[in-house]
Structure formats: C-alpha cells, structure tokens
Amino acid sequence: MTAVEYYRPGDQEQADSELPDLDCRENIDAMVHGFYQRLLNDPVMAPVFLDVAQIDLNKHLPIICQYWHKMLLGEGGYQRHMMARHRDLDDQMPLTGEHHERWLGHFMANLEGRYGGPCTDRARRLAATIMDNLYLQLHRRRASAT
Image 1 (cartoon, helix red, strand yellow):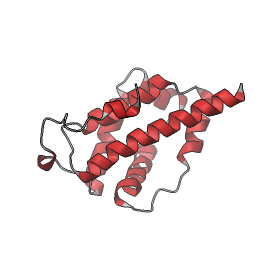
Image 2 (cartoon, helix red, strand yellow):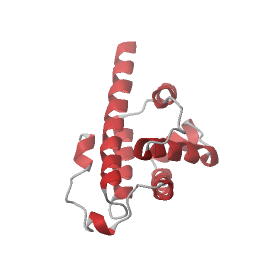
Image 3 (cartoon, rainbow, N blue to C red):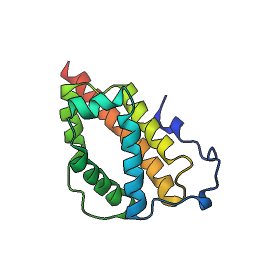
Image 4 (cartoon, rainbow, N blue to C red):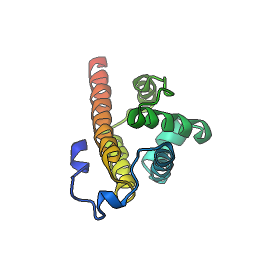
C-alpha cells in the first residue's frame, strides 16, 4: 500500500467548510498533539518513540509543531535536518514499511473529521510525500550498505 492510498478526497463525512483548517499555530499545535497521542497509543509505534528514540515529549512536541508551522504557514523556526535524525533512528532499529504505513495512517486518521480546508489538504499531501521519501531513502540506504 502506498502513502497516497490513505488519502482519498471525498471520503470526509463533514464538509471541509465546517471544520477548522490548519491555517494557524493553535490548530497545528492541537493537530500535532492529537497525532502523537495516537502514535503513543499504538503498540508498534510507541516503542519506536519511547524506547528506541527515547523522546522527551516536552522537548519533542514543540519541535514537531515548529516543523508543521514551517511547512503550512511558512514560518522559519524549524532549522533541523529531519532526514539525519531518522537515519540515526533507523541505525538503531530499522524503520519498516509497517512503521511508515502506521505513521501515515495515524496522521490521516487524526485529520479526518477534525480538520478541513486548503492547509489541511496540503498537510495530507505533505505527509504522504514525506513518508514516501523517507521510506525510499532509508530503504535505499540500507540496500546500498549490504
């Protein structure tokens, strides 16, 4: 299953116009917090974040919020190299297709019925592209190392 299969325009039960958009920091922050709540309740994903990466939520969530502020609002606060961090994590525990599908599935499910509009649509497209690129790069890197 590809990342794009998670997003099917028209599947939303509520009209986009009735839902808040991810067009402000407050909505983005709420989306990120809801997304991580889903991830950390997933028995496959929680160990990646808590046991392997050993994230400190109080430090990690503001960074992820900054990332989405940059991606959706054009703000410049996020200055980290996402791929390097995921390569380091992949060295500790290979991130599989299942991890990527679950991450994207939770991201899309977190938006469904809660957010709608142009910025939300952009977030869906970005998340799918990000996951596809991340998975492809990590997979190529592992394949070239063998």
